[in-house]
Amino acid sequence: MATVSFENVAKVYPDGTRAVSGMNLTIDDREFMVFVGPSGCGKTTALRMVAGLESISEGVVRIGDRPVNHVPSRDRDIAMVFQSYALYPHLSVYENIAFGLRVRKMSKQEIDQRVQNAASILGLEGFLDRKPRALSGGQRQRVAMGRAIVREPAAFLMDEPLSNLDAKLRVQMRAEIGGLQHDLGVTTIYVTHDQVEAMTMGDRVAVMRKGEVQQVAPPQELYDNPVNLFVAGFIGSPAMNMFEGVIRADNGSLAVEAGSQRLTLDESLVGARPALRAYADRTVVVGVRPEDIQDVALAPDTPSDRRLRGKVLLTEALGSEIVVHLAVDTPPASTDEALELASEADEVRRPALNEDDQTTTTFVGRFGPRSRVAVGDQIESAVDTRSLHFFDPATGLGIHDQTEGARP
Image (cartoon, rainbow, N blue to C red):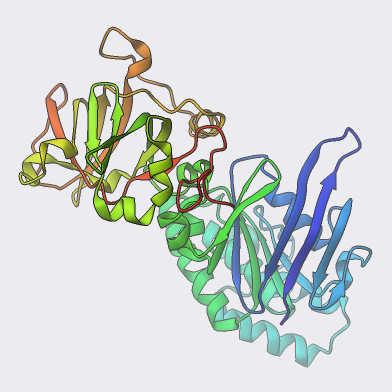
């Protein structure tokens, strides 16, 4: 096994495009690291530089202690699992799994032992004589995994391996891959655009944007303490609600005013984010997770200054919860990061329900299943102001304990 490290790595194409820039990251031995981000953020390019499928323009990539910038892909002691499976259609499952070992001229006995062991791990014992066309998508993905396992590499590299599977099978396979990686203890880099995959699979997650790493942290830390507005909006499903408001100081406490709405901030929140006081009478971007917005009928003790008023646009009953879309009279976040996130999600801003199109934001709340709100209702929703997030609109950085926002 081995570590994989990026030391100020960049990929610059002949036309000057920087697909990856200044990447510094170490994936620990046996760690499951996920690269996640929108299309074109550089995550696959970074993976391909480790694999030797892309040249490295600047910096050094190491596998273990060895720089591999100029080492051929076949000599890097890595195994790659592709989105397309890349199986040989004319070969059986056994022959597909054994192919790389035969190229390395291993003995028939060693090949058979490794193939049988991989088949046992992956539940493929009864399929070794079949051709890929006779397998389901999930079974083909297991064959691709088997081909990687038998090589016993220093690292696995996986490029969106589940994107061709249906939703139910993706859930099953991500659990299998996560369990398999844990059992084998192989250093793994996994690329995906699906932040749910990233959150459920990775020991740590590297969020990328425009060729740069924004934040590297365990999944829960990314969710609870996003370093900037982009990470906050990208991580979480449904996504974090964002709007613009002005911080107001009132008798020692702080509140945020946004359109016709006013929320008094919880003292514990202000204590944890002392830099907020320096933003008094300044505009900030406020973020609130959907699970922190609840039907006030289910939380009747919520003070009036910790409620948002809005009109129900849509309800989605999911059994365990109701996802409610609300039109709320607050200015929407309009920073570059917020607009990029909306574009990535292919969002279309709903028509405003008041006279000023710029003052309505669509919020998403996760209401309890006993909520009885209906489309068209004018309602109040309870907001947990202990869990709000704040960002400097000029820098996009989170407002924590630094006067001008947290450092990445």
